[in-house]
Image 1: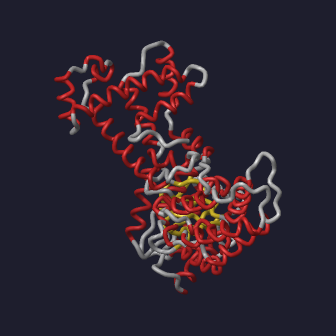
Image 2 (image 1 turned 45 degrees about the vertical axis):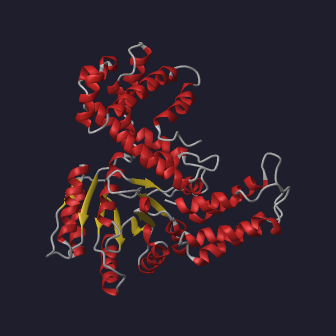
Image 3 (image 1 turned 90 degrees about the vertical axis):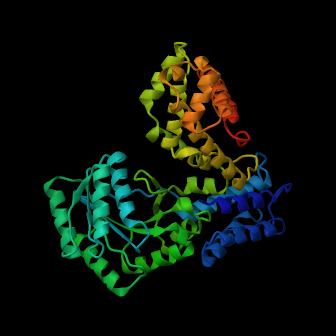
Length: 457
């Protein structure tokens, strides 16, 4: 998300250099470029005009402190305005009501409402330690009811059955009664979507809302629809007292216009970003972190949170103890590291959150990511084609064994040789991790594992 905008803004903001003070003259061209970058990102025109005016008002006449260059001072102003535009801070779900707290999901057909209901149930269960019941009031699509049931079973939350012969209000009320009997903390009500906003649909969801009085009414919208997402959100907000917005499919949105328009047009906070099909792919929306990512500064806090949620601490501790005892880092450990990276969303997800210093071209980096992802899959296939003894001691792998492994993994003999060489380098690095400054050395050394080297950070 934001790849195009980040590329444009990164190039634009480098032009404000060599001045002791920011003036209307020396930022005029930069402001024009910022305006064009936002319009290309499909940000709504009124939002762009207001945003550029605010930057100009704050920037003109700003004395640049000794610790900052004019470019850095201007970037700081742009970042502050981006944060302000998207909502200043993350707004959590208001679940401090008498249980069960009811969450109503609204939105158009195809926006990903049912998938998001499942993701939200998992988020509440795993990160907020809540018991959750999910129910579908979509009486027009039997497949939606079945889909929610499957998601509930996969995630391990309670599913309340419903069918197309019932009325949406009756379904929702019955589910809440069931949740009270079972002392469940949160009820998520999935509603019917339409292909466009219509009066009949709005009347139905208004009736459901009035009957169940939810603490949260979340509007689910496809980020790839750009500023149309903000306009649709406004139409729903005029009919329903929305409490927040969930942007879905943001991993497929290279522009990011919806994220920058929704808050300004609806006045409602973006509470979550949906980042793919997997049930864990839902992230709380932090305007300050997203602003940093837009300006190519990375999002290290989200990266740390992602690592904490996905990394197997037990395995990590065992590996550290093993290396300290001098037992070495074998190919099974190497495979574990590759799998841990995959659990964190792969290289693309990691790189997206790393600071992009030194003007790395995002499209070039995207090509490097794809090549590296492909190489990692190949490495895993090669290791899986080895015997346990070979994985524990790669020194025993002779020429004939390399040929057998290459045949079994669908690779070339030289690919097997390269993997063994990379493993040796990784072995050396792992020994350094326990020494002072080891992690930095390890990160530098990991460049050899990437096609064309690791992007300069």
